[in-house]
Length: 615
Image 1 (cartoon, rainbow, N blue to C red):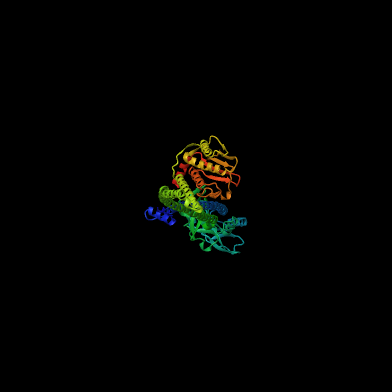
Image 2 (cartoon, rainbow, N blue to C red):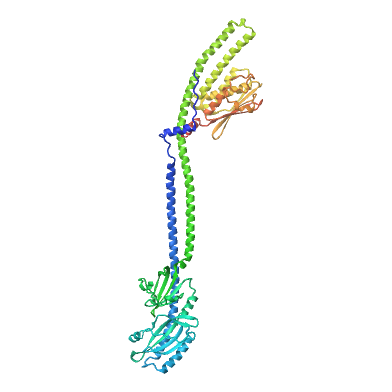
């Protein structure tokens, strides 16, 4: 008979190839999950990036506008203080000129007596007016009648009236302010602002002009006292846009046309407490962005303005903006790094999952192939069993029969040694028959379909023990049996296992005068533990691993007999029921065989089958 073909092994390369062929010739691209994850993660990152950038932009824009509003409010307050200072200074000069004009009212012409009186008043007034540089009176023809000036003003200051003809046409026009003029002083050249007041006589006829000089140095002192921010600029403009005063001082701009200032063309001018027009906003000055605030004096044809470079006004904002931008960049970088780490980890998991799916798919094929091979091996084993049962038994019976015939018919012709050889042949043929029977029983144990049903183990042990007692009635054996032991399983297989265990206990305790065998059970959460103990010869636990192997006898040659198949059959029966078996012993102190059986064998077998199918 041909030997069964050996089971073929499947290499990992064959597994992958089978998965490739089953998938249609090419492996599925494992990068597809990574591409989807990349779109998901980086799309989310892009969205968060846009949100952060927009939030930072909105925060920066809000803070910029807030800082501009704060600076604008500060400039408006400073412009109001400057307006009050200018109004007070010009008003003081205006009051003096009006007083001079009233002294000459209702006179037909200016007399020398009146000039002397006015000269005394002018000298006393200049002593108490640091902002005034000079007072003078001219007649209706523009000829100077009186000139009183401060001691620090070098030489006699001669300057023409703004326009005599204009005063003649409008003698009651009020105070007029001229363009700034530069005169020599003890400290060098200095700018002065001329102011004039018409003097009318009887019938409202113009009889003279009273004029004065306001020192710009007085405003410079105010500019320093209020401690403006660096590079701030203050301006004093006439109503027609002429520059009368500027600090820091720039001589080339004095008297220049500044009518392009926003207050002259703005439609956003508002009335501030019904006193003066106010304008505040941004303006380009000398090519640089400034924030400005202008105020129009309510009683005089003057405007005051304050401007501050935008980079100075927004200095604190720029520092805050840089911190916010750096923090935002760090946050975006940290978010990018976190996104990449999470994406890389998740992508690796997806790739591992995809590879695991491929392995599972190939594993299914391997299981199918191995199952087919196992079924073929089982068929070969069945064929081998039939061959052993029929093909080997026939020559074995012939050997045994001819040996007995030779022993009966021709033993007298053989010497003692020949007769011994013939007896050995007979005993060996008988033992070979026993081994064949045991092999068939072991194969049947592994191949037999389980018929699970309730089994009364106590009754089954009692029947088996009674059979052993009948076979050897001379033996004195005491049996300790726990009553009402029951379980679920195949009764025929369990009877086979218990028979082998009882037979061993019976056999290996025969040297005892009174042999003792006990069978007990103990319930646990998952299973029942059964113990079969005897007081026989025992064995060395160093050889316990050989105990349940086929054809392994620990007491071979000691006259106990046996084929070494019984305990191997017991192990297979117990494992098929979902339990396990082991032994405990020592030489001369007996043996204990412990095996477990689950409470519900059928449920256990179904659970194992479902787990194997899922895997």
